[in-house]
Amino acid sequence: MTIKRCVFIILFSAIFTFASSAGINIKTPAWRKVGELGKEKNYIFVCCGDLKTKKGKKMMAVLEKTKKELSGRKKKSKKGKQKRISKKIAIVEVKMDDPKERELIGSFNIRENPTVLVVAPNGAATGYFPGTVDKNNLVESLVSLKEAELIKNLQDGCVVFLCFHGNKEPDFTAIKTDLKSVADNFKGTVNVVYANSDDKNEEKLRENFKMSSESETTVFIVIPPGRTAAKLEGDEINKANLMRTLLSSCGSGGCAPSSCK
Image 1 (cartoon, helix red, strand yellow):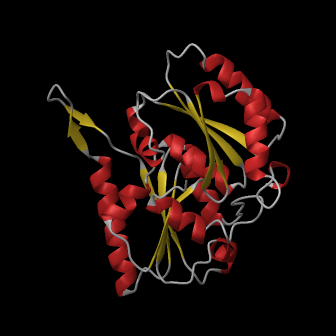
Image 2: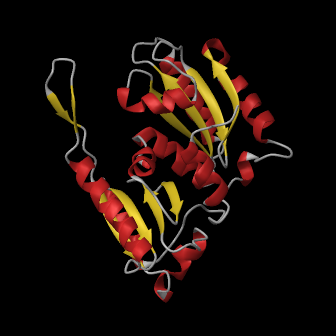
C-alpha cells in the first residue's frame, strides 16, 4: 500500500531526493528564520525567486491573501456557534541569486522562478510548488501536527511505526511498551508516531491510511521516502512480531533501519 495524497507524492519525489542522508539540514539565514518561526508554531510559506517580476508579484499576492483568510477563518459548530480554526502563518522571502541561500536553493533543487515551499512548525517540508500556486494547494499543504511529525521523520531518513489508537483501549499500554522497546533497538533510525483515532484534527491522516475512529489499534510501518510496508492490527502487535515485520519490511534490498541515517 502506498500513500496517495498529493502532498506526499510531491515531497518525496522532489524534496527527499535532494535532502542529505541526515535529513533537511540547511544552515542559511532564511532557513534559520524558518526554524525560529516554527518554534512560535507558525506554518511558513518560503517564497524563492524574484518577487518584482509579474509571476513573483502574483505568487506573493496569493500567499498574502491565503495568509489573511486563514488567520481569520471560522466555521460553525454543531451548536451554531462560530469557531475559529485559524493557523499562524508567516512568509519568508528568499532571493534565488543570493549566495548566502545557495545551500537552501540547491537542497530543494529549486530551478523555477518563483517557487514556494510550505514548511510545518516542526520543520517538515509539506508543500513544493514551482512556478505557480493557488489557495487550495497551500491549504492542502498545511498538514496536521501528527502528519507533520510523520513527514519530518521520513524526511530525516527514519522508519516510522505509525500507531492509530483509542483512549480507552485496555491493551494500548502494552502495545506502547512493545513499540518503544523495538524502536529503542534502532536509536535515531526508527521512531514511533501516535495518532489518536478520536482526534478530529487527524481526520485526513486517518483517511490516508483508510482508518476510521472505530478501528482497533493499528500499526503501519512506513519507510522512506513514504511507502507503507506493513500493517499490523490488534493481537498482531507484539514485540516479536513488530521486530520480525520491521526487519522483513526494511531488510535486504530495502531500507535497513541500521542504515537509515
